Image (cartoon, rainbow, N blue to C red; front, side):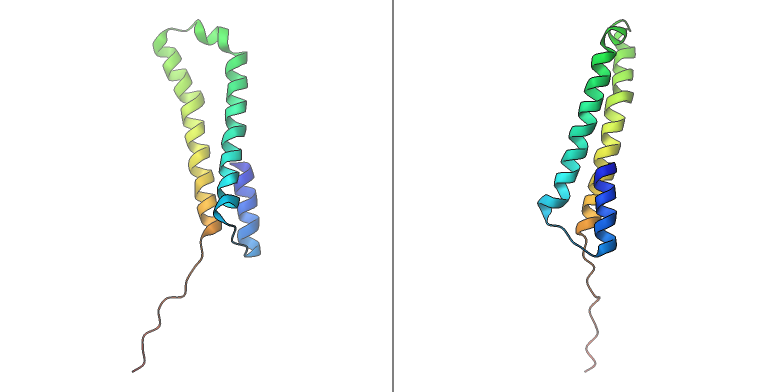
Length: 96
């Protein structure tokens, strides 16, 4: 989210409109970075997590994985879309 947002804001300010791959590759990078961080967190907390009852594990994994992943994906996708957005002039009425 940080990578895609930072570069998208910089591109928007400069008036540069990236191609599809250039915009969405940042979303993929943000996702991979977040998944690596979350995988490391689970690896470090595996034993305490498995000591919890099943319902507590589900809620914990939902809060620690699903919610952050969705926030990052949605925010990164919005910035990727914004960076590719091109305003068009509204159609002018015909004077005749």
